[in-house]
Amino acid sequence: REVVSRSGSSGVAAGRPGKATTSSLLSQADQAVMVAKTKGGNAISVFTDEMQEESEKRNMIELSLRAAIADESLFLEYQPEVDLRTGRIVGVEALVRWNHPLLGLLQPGSFIDVAEATNVAGELGRWVIRKACGQWADWRSQAPELDLDLSVNVSPGQLAGLDFLDVVANALTEFDLRKGALCLEITENAVLSDLTWTREALEGLHAMDVEAAIDDFGTGYSSLSHLKALPVGTLKIDKGFVMNLDTNPEDRAIVKSIIGLAESFGLELVAEGVENVESARQLLDMGCHRAQGFLFSRPVSAEKIGKLLAAGAIEVGL
Ligand code: C2E
Ligand code: MG
Ligand code: MG
Image 1 (cartoon, rainbow, N blue to C red):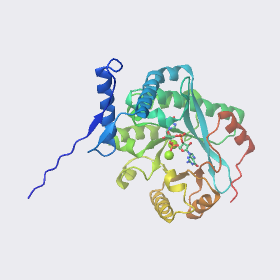
Image 2: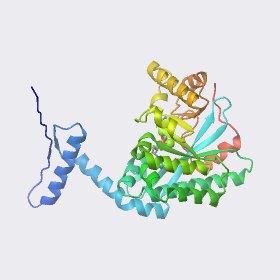
Image 3: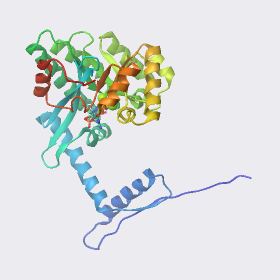
């Protein structure tokens, strides 16, 4: 006996004659049905005011993102990575923000995926890489002996761009970055979307002495065989496993196994999302020395980083 089943989703939109047009109602119903489908399907969803707001916001972001890259309303904050044993700042991660003229301060979560969906990822990424490398050079000119790594996030669309390696190479030359100082962070899903090209891109980076890290490690689907096959030097343990390390034994077990994995593959480790001293202590006990999180510093301005660097170390309290 074979069971055949069907399911369906509907989107509903309502409007008054004279106020709404057929095409706006159809598009609203379309958006509502997408919501029903992403919630698992086989459901009915009614177009709401929140969906309206969300879609207007997204449209606004979409329309002004390209201009924002040109007019400097984007800016970078930096979050330190510390050595848990000494509190020394060993690196910083650049994180993009957007001062939107109408929507206010936007976090990357609200516009990176729009950039991806509208083919602006390459331009946005180029801006971030140049800006961050330029800032690194500035810190360096203030303190020539400075030994600081710079991490920059790379989105899947950016990694896939044909000029990706050129953009990186140009920034290295323009700002005279020392070998190994730049680390590019990619997510597991970006690694997987096109494995052949990813390998080529990562090998290109490797040839330029640029490090590569897998960000949010543990949340995606990368299999261990990819770790072996790709020139990746660092795993960043996702903050979801780190934030509650002090109270959650399952998280501890996962972190422990990631640490073991990194050791056997000879990979560097960074734990992100360290929010309390107890979690930091546990990381250190388990053999992870490098960490970033609100406990040490939130992402801050370049100027503030300059001051932290001048102070030498962040009090870890372990
Ligand atoms: P990510 O690369 O994993 O960056 C870490 C995120 O965790 C940052 O959020 C940071 O503010 C936050 N975080 C750091 N420490 C803690 C902590 O102790 N507790 C908690 N709860 N959160 C912490 P943010 O800045 O909102 O960035 C979110 C994501 O957006 C980043 O995740 C990255 O994937 C992406 N992103 C940020 N900047 C860029 C960029 O320039 N380019 C691209 N492609 N993606 C970016
Ligand atoms: Mg990152
Ligand atoms: Mg992360």
